[in-house]
Length: 115
Image (cartoon, rainbow, N blue to C red; front, top):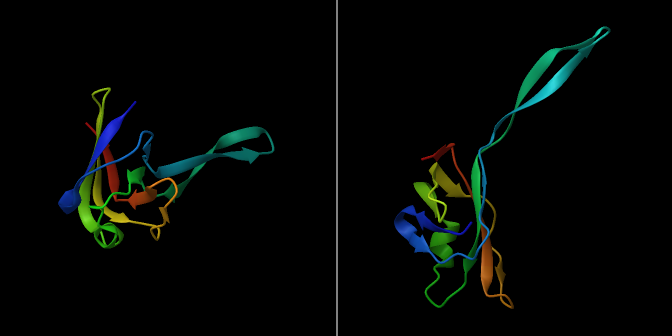
């Protein structure tokens, strides 16, 4: 599925195919006892995220992307599904792959809402 990424005040970013979404949340593990499985335990595993590859162009504002915080991001897919990452921020330092003309960006947020 292909999609496009609307990133708050940054507008629509020119992305390559293959963005990744993760809902974050709880990981459940089996709790074992002498007689077998007793149930499960829950542990918060991580924050929801959208990971995308942005095309590096003359108009790409790396500083604005690097400093992006506290806005919603919407990923619209060609399958008709839309995902909104709430109160998002740029997680990792930016790295531009000059040869490929792209930069990978990881946006974390407080909640990923499918619509």
